[in-house]
Length: 154
Image 1: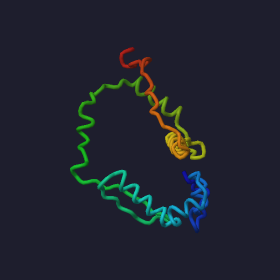
Image 2: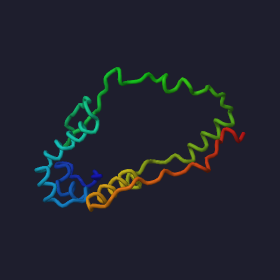
Image 3: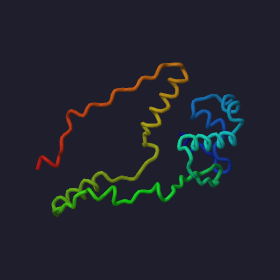
Image 4: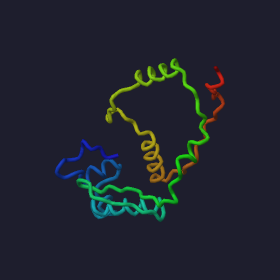
């Protein structure tokens, strides 16, 4: 992922920075996309291909584009469908105090420098493996043998 700190405020990211962050050489980026504008267009095409026929609002944002996925009313489900089956639970003051204590103990300012995007790392590994011609096999799902229902331990 291109880090904002690498971008110049007046020029945005250079194609060299984009190529370096993507792990490709600059001539390949220019060959396949023709430059940054072609890369933006390819990104818009990729969004359309991934999501099928959807409405995406594109708007300029500084030196790039921001896409907002728009939904038709029939695609938006009523929140009651999600939350109706959640039981109303009477929370005691002790439980609420404990929850507040845990949240306050874990609360901290977000530091993007410390954030690790494991999904992006795994995706980059997969893409590089495919580029190198390696066969990609599905990893086995972790077995949930040691799952404990904390609600039953009361």
